[in-house]
Amino acid sequence: MYQILKKEMLTPTICRMEVKAPRLAAAAQPGQFLIVRADEQGERIPLTISDFDAEAGTVTIVTQEVGASSADIIALEPGEGFSDVVGPLGLPSEFMEMGPEQLSSMRYIFIAGGVGTAPVYPQAKWLHAHGIPVDVIIGAKTKDLLIYKEEMAAVCDNLFLCTDDGSEGFHGMVTALLEKLVATDGRQYTQAVAIGPMIMMKFTTLTAKKLGLPITVSLNTLMVDGTGMCGACRVSVGGKTRFACVEGPEFDGYQVDFDEAMRRQGQYKAEEAEANEKHKCKIGRGK
Image (cartoon, rainbow, N blue to C red):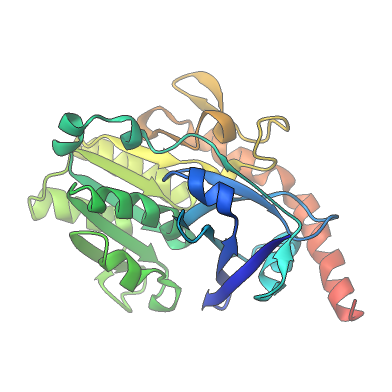
């Protein structure tokens, strides 16, 4: 059993957990993910690693309640544990392959949307620790849905908050804020990274292309089994079929067919709705 050491609700539907997994923590790198099962009959759920501590032997995961399986995960309490935790999986962020000279020439801007803020954190943290300039935009619909504000502020040079309703920070979409920072304020970046809802990454990529800014996106939301076996994570990148869980999850945003990716995201909606109804009935019976 992989014991849950700490649990914190970041919002009413987003939960952060620190889990004991020494071997995984020792091998994890920014950009990778893991798979958890709440119990022996549970669904395999891919979750991006939002932090890791090799010395303490712990990994941190952030789960948003969107269905029955994620609700089962969030229902677990400290002292309880997962039946399985597998990882690290996927390829590390591309900057992990860069030499010191190339890294020293980089200046990053991360655009994080909603729960996508969690996987941005270890990347910004690693770059900041190695002296690479990092700015971060965190966007959400309203201020109550902004997460990792204090944590992110500690690992980046400049943190910009953005809400659709203007309740905190910049009033508007992350795309408008990105354009303001680059086109109006004159901030210069060599690389953008966007992680969040697929539609947000699509339009952030279009904005970055308009600004002449290279951009990497993370397609972790496409993953199901996390090993490439099920094929659910297939996506066209540069006209070729790629598997997000084994060849990603990060890809060149200019090359991703976002419309195809969004269609693929909706392929299991009927099954998810059925599972949610069964889960509600189970909770109603007190089982």
